[in-house]
Length: 261
Image (cartoon, rainbow, N blue to C red; front, side, top):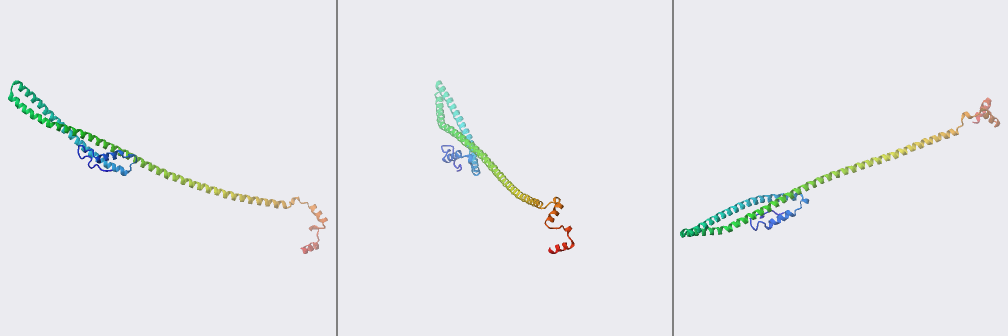
């Protein structure tokens, strides 16, 4: 954005120069909603320039107004004097005092000539005062617009910065939540694997106990119960088989039996 430079060079037709118009257009078209910090600082520098020029414009307007009022007052005073001389001139003529009338006519002509010279000066002072007032109003409005845009831009930038900080905080929180979820999922997986291993170990233990129980049962089933043997039946079976009970064997038979073994 360009500076003011010749923005307030004079109070005439040139005071709204091309430079000033370009600056005004730049400020009006500047979008505070998307301004960066650098752009805000640049606009603040332009605001400083505009406010300084607005102060100068106000002082110039007040000075032009004072000069205009003084010119009008001086013109009115000369006009009142001319009207008085006109009245005195007419009275002198009516009274027949031609000498006085001639003197009054000469003075009146000089005063009228002075009034004719003052009239364009008064108009010029009035015009300059009006132009200074318009220009001061324009530069003041431009300063107010610039200040409002700077405040809006600052507010928007601070809001955007807060939003960015909140977004960063939320991003970190989300990352922490994801990490905790991953850790929890890992613990659950480990717990599940441990449960499967324990179940397998328990199954092996149960199978081993079942196998031992089955072996015990088999041994018991294959082993004759002592209480169920009948001594008389056993002796009878041995007798019919030609076998003798150890109790009925002689010493020689028992020795012979041992030799066969």
